[in-house]
Amino acid sequence: MTNFPNSLPATQNCETFWVQFDSTGNLCLRIITKEEVAPHVMVEQVPVSLIQRAAPTASFPVTIWEMPLPIGVETVEVEGVELSLPTSFKKIAFIGDTGCRPNQGCDPSQWPFQQIAERILADKPDLIIHLGDYIYRHQYAQQKSCPLHIHFDEGDNWLGWQKEFFAPLANVLPFIPWTFIRGNQESHPCASEGWRRFLDGYPYHEEEVDYDAPYVIALDKVNLIVHDSSYIASDYQQILPEDHLKHLILPSSKPAWLLTHRPLWGIVNDQKHNEGTPLIILNEHGTLQHFLKPFPGTLTAIFSGHIHAFEIIKLSSSAVYQFVIGNGGVALEEDRPPEVLRNTCLEDQRIEEALALVIFGYGLAEHNGGEWKLAFKDTKGEIIEAFSWGAQSSLVAADHP
Image (cartoon, rainbow, N blue to C red; front, side, top):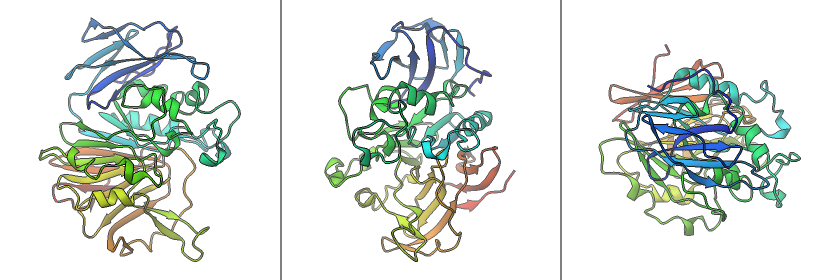
């Protein structure tokens, strides 16, 4: 179980630090400092050297350091703050679309990201998975690519990332391991530079990259497939080899979850474009859906953000559930009626299970007795809905505590 200090002590040089899974499928430590001076770090009480991940620039006047952590490491100390890392991952929190649009009002009453993050900390998960869209205040040259997101000197720079991501997580980020998924807000020309510097699972590179190759994180109870769906364009099919996900399904009896920002299926209001039709099914992943038919046998769930709500969709012909958790702080979708969804046809298949809740919150999955229970929680940590799915992939309403 992770050890949770009450807060991160301020140091003269260290801005913040965290532990995340990288593209090797292993944990690494990352640290942001004000100066180009490496902080003091110990792993299992042994001093270690850090690698400079990214040097400071005019837009990002901070230095990012990193170090791969040895497999099985249990304690890390940064500037005198000791962290105890989990040895098993049985409780996993999900959050997505946490940034704040300038036109929504970015005070806590209208932007509950910090409150949600601190509620997640209180649940003491072993891992937090962020499903993408960290920052909505972009500076960019092509306004049509990132509409409505200009906010003076705040954007894809240290000030923007500090205000919209690191500051709200000051007392949470260092104390739980993370997995970060790239959202469309982190695609070029939006907030891609900050993404590559801070959170990308791959080594830092100065050149823009539209698409990162997928990778697997093999946990003790589930295999996580990290997939970059931030960049969807007419040449998407050319970017994605047809077997690019199937070969990542490990020969294992463990279930596999696909983590990707844009859902394969989702429910959104579209009255503006479809008069008289209050709901449509978002279907942005046509090529990806094609590659995943039939779904690999061990794939049991897809976790996404992008739609600013809680959602569940299951098609009649598939054992795989699409969970959407994109309600971590940015302005929510318009409310939608609970009827209409079930038995709607999509891709010549019937929607067998469907749920859509427009409320701020997060997800918490717990493994117990061979199955996973997923709770949708609100900003106070109260369970709104809870479900279980296991080897038979049968979604069953779980009892609320």
